[in-house]
Image (cartoon, rainbow, N blue to C red; front, side, top):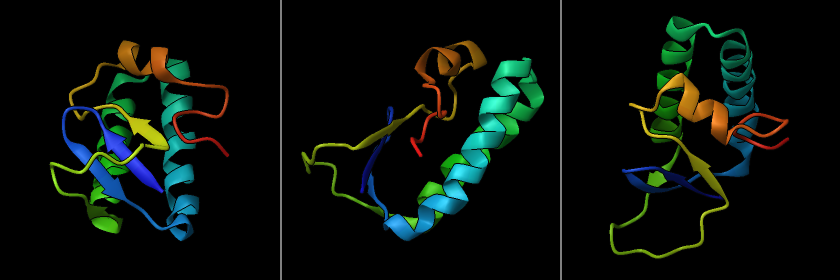
Length: 92
């Protein structure tokens, strides 16, 4: 799966990593819903760090369609709230 991180670029992730990412996404969703800004910031950082750690960055000139778009590390709680679907940022 190709994941775009806003303002950074694209990362290729194997589907086997999505259980770990979904766990962080569930935590992020709960923190956004409760307005826990400190928890939100910590979990967003952990989610993006996991994508970087588990994925392979695509070259800057690659134009692959992104199947998932994640906010940048400096996104606000309100900005992420506007991006969230019923399942969080990561469907499933």
